[in-house]
Image 1 (cartoon, rainbow, N blue to C red):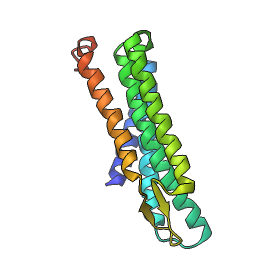
Image 2: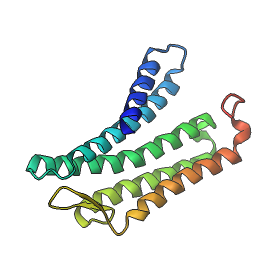
Image 3: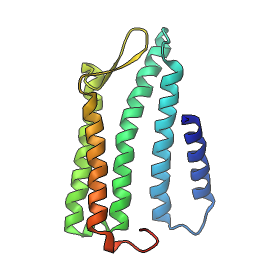
Image 4: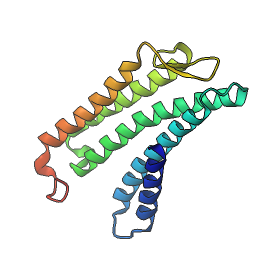
Amino acid sequence: METWGVLICIVAITLLLIESKIEKHTRRQFLSLFGCLLIDLWCNIAGLMLKGTTNSVGQVMVRISNFGEFCFGFLLCFFFSIYILNILGGKENKKLRIWYILASVILALGELLVIISQFTGWLYYIDEHAIYHRGGLYWLSGVLGTVSLLLNAIVICIHRKCLKPVQR
């Protein structure tokens, strides 16, 4: 399934780079979203392929792929929040600025949690056989992602009148 996701992302990125009618700013936002998703999917595939590798290179690559998957997952939520912020009017709106700060805090907490987890195993840990295991606070990564998406949905509902009919 991840392979199809990678192919779809590559096609979408290629079309975004070829298409000339898309605004430069919008193109950059979509490239960020699809690029982030592409890297996240690659990390997932690498983690699955390297699972159980016992040599030192495999051990390191499994750690890097799992780290990347968590980090780019949080980054993807953040880029989506930025996209919504921009279609709703940008940072000039004080209400939206608060929401932007909340999205930034969620990203920072998520990334910090992933970094700390490398030493504590809170979110996940990799055993000596290069097998991924969920940590005791794994649920917290899901909560942060869900809160981010709920905030996006709430902001869209509140500011739906700012959206063009095509965007609705």
